[in-house]
Length: 201
Image (cartoon, rainbow, N blue to C red; front, side, top):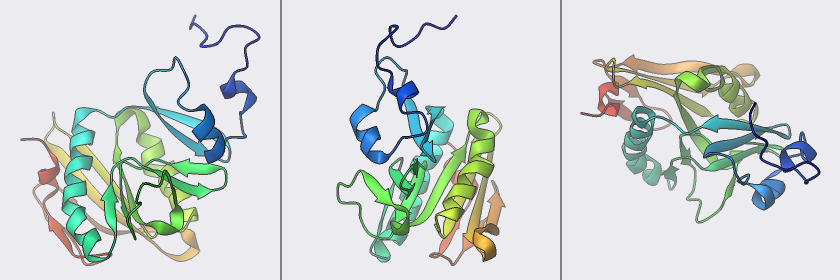
């Protein structure tokens, strides 16, 4: 049986704030003492947990940040890895990388309107969330571009898919490529690279 993080009768934010989470409450109560390192996200007041990424996805996110950085700067914006983007008063996401329309300048909570592109490096333990759930909530929040990346160092596999917001607040595939091919797009800014560049040497 899993040991409880709290003693009986003790006020437990995971129980008492279930369905009520907001950025203000997150600033006050997160991270939860005694829990292992996790990523905290929230949908309609319900707190979501996901474990830390593996080295291959972390490396891919870092490489993408470097690829995107000069283009974001040319537009007056900036690139980041794992920051909190507020989708609604009681929902937020922490994408693996993001391009903001303007620098965050120390802000902790970033309104979705300031995000030009957000991206996720799909992992085995968050496959459904990264491919279905997160694109859906980001599209609903009006974020124009969503980039999905899948990498496997062991299999020497890499895929990059860029989704663009279309009619009915739904994403459509805008550009994609596998390792060994060329990923190319002119929107939201010119990009041209081989997805294999996201794999460690």
